[in-house]
Image 1 (cartoon, one colour):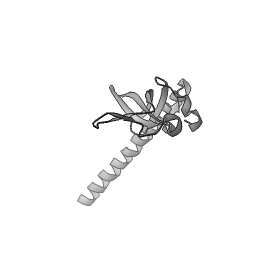
Image 2 (cartoon, rainbow, N blue to C red):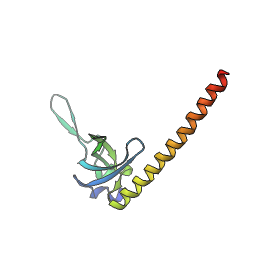
Image 3 (cartoon, rainbow, N blue to C red):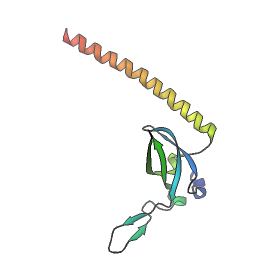
Image 4 (cartoon, rainbow, N blue to C red):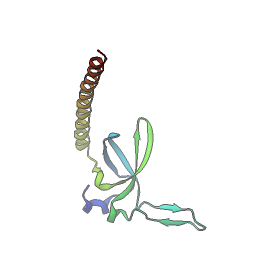
Length: 120
């Protein structure tokens, strides 16, 4: 997401979280201007990541394999939600995973062949 749009992001807004680890996920903004409570003699609420409009940091919630997760992410890594973009990213991710599975099959075949040839 462009930095010019960071100031417009609101809590409960839907975004797309494309990740190599999780795939393409629909996520909800749960906190802007992320605060951390410091456990000191008196509690201090601080903005260690900066304000969202300036630094682009938000807390998001998404479901991965049936487990709800929360992460702090930068808006530069997220995409504004639209059904068309979501489907397009999901299709590209699925195609990449198919190619990766195919390539890993060749890798396994190659490593097995090496083992067999070195054992002869």
